[in-house]
Amino acid sequence: MMVLVTTLVLGTGAWADKAQEQAAARVATLYKQGVSALNDGDAKLAQECFLTVLQIEPGHGNARYQLLNLKSNGPKLAALVRKKKLTQIQVPKVNFAGSTLSEAVEGLDLLIEKETDGKCAANFIIQDPQGVFEKRPITIKLGKVPASVVFEYILKMANASARYDEHAILIRPIGGEACLLYT
Image (cartoon, rainbow, N blue to C red; front, side):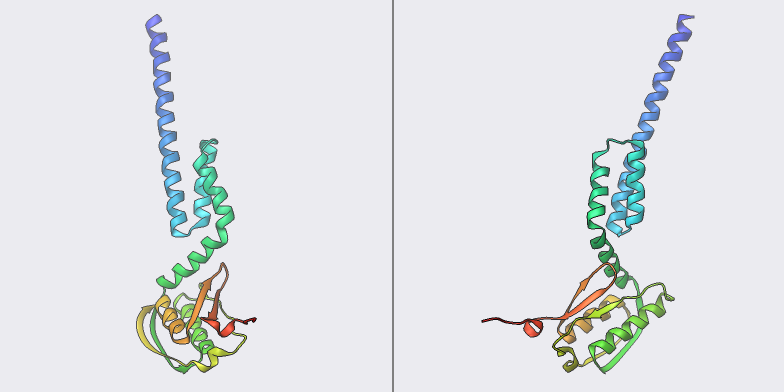
């Protein structure tokens, strides 16, 4: 009888150890998946992974930190996703001849929408209070390139910079054209 009780106790302990090992392995896998999702810009999946880690192991400090970081840096992450999407969209053909910046980005936006069946829009916003972009013609003829490449050429030709935000891409002139100097 004593042997049976000892066997049951030891067997239960071994089973508990195995369950803890499995839980630890699942936590490690979920945490890595969450970090990978963050690196890919998938905030929703990252959040789900970190929350699941905390359900399994409530004291997991790294998962808690990542969730707080995700909450405070969500808009930055969304901006990075917007930028990354432009690299993934292949534009079959671009031909802008003497276009204004406004016409070029509008054309690029239409090409992006067409290539993604309306699932993606660049949402360009041009900030040019001095009207300097009107004096800089854009002439580009490219084929089978990522939309990000087309956009970079447009920016270079217009002497412009871009800031990626969560919901749009803001375009401004480079240099002192849009700056007011006080002496």
